[in-house]
Amino acid sequence: MTDTCEAHLFINGFAGRGRAARQAENISHRLWQGGLRLTTAETRSPGSLIDQLAVACESGAKIVLIAGGDGSVNEAINGIMEADADPRLGVIPLGTGNDFAKTLGIPLAWRRACDRIIDGIGRPETDARIDVGRCNERFFLNGVGIGFDARVAIVANRMKWPAGQIRYPLALAKTLMSGIQIPRVKIVTDESVLEMPITLISAMNGRIAGGIFPLAPDARINDGQLDIVIADGMNRRQVMRLLPRLMKGTHLSLPAVSLIRSRTLKLETSLPLAVQTDGEILTAAARNLDIELIPGRLSVIGGRPAE
Image (tube, rainbow, N blue to C red; front, side, top):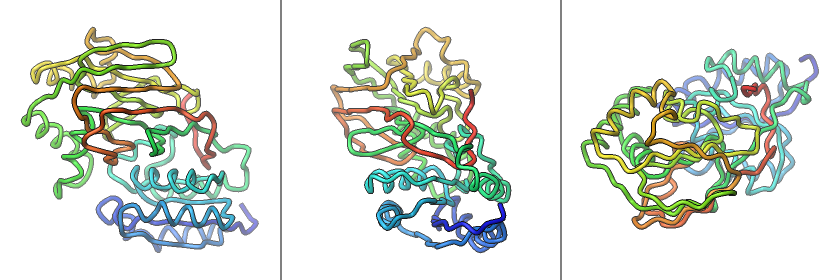
């Protein structure tokens, strides 16, 4: 790219245990060298990125770049949707799991991610046009985890140590030790109504959860369908047997695991359930959820979703 282009860069100072903040100057410099004229803002409080994105979009921002992790990207899409805007989004993944970046084939090394943005910013026709999800009033990009999955996310988010992807398996082990909940849930999709005990339900737009689990290995983030993974009610031993299959992405062949594809999902539960969106806790006590996918709502610079 040779012409100067204006973009808004948002850096989440908390992402990656401060990694984004440490690289902020280097990221800005590399993007500037690539021809971008930046308006830069750094956020250090949870949730503030939503308001910052909304204000920027309402002021006419056409290109917004996020340096951070999945939580940062989740706040970004909520700010974009709050403003009812349609900017082009660029992502420089600096979080722990970076599930969204992995699904879209965005380089995990920040220099290469910056270069991918620089290469694509002058060619909007090469952007990936992807789906956006909504869970009640919260928007998401990668997926919604309900039940055991979300309880693990709660534990992981509270952990001060260790950093990196090992934190999620450790949180999983802690959650297992605290016991398994098996609520009875009514599940309504586009074409079916089920009522059954469950251990977890994940409504996936992307493929990967927790940084290392290909929970929905065949999901496509631009096909207009959620991949809804349902694990029947299981005891602790059964969950432990499931985990190696989850890590390999072979769990969908198990009798206790099912997959439904649907644009919408409604849930009613007998017990209050934990819910996470893109790894961020939505609630610890949901009884009714209304989930839907909005096809082709967002453009991502340099995104290369699997075909």
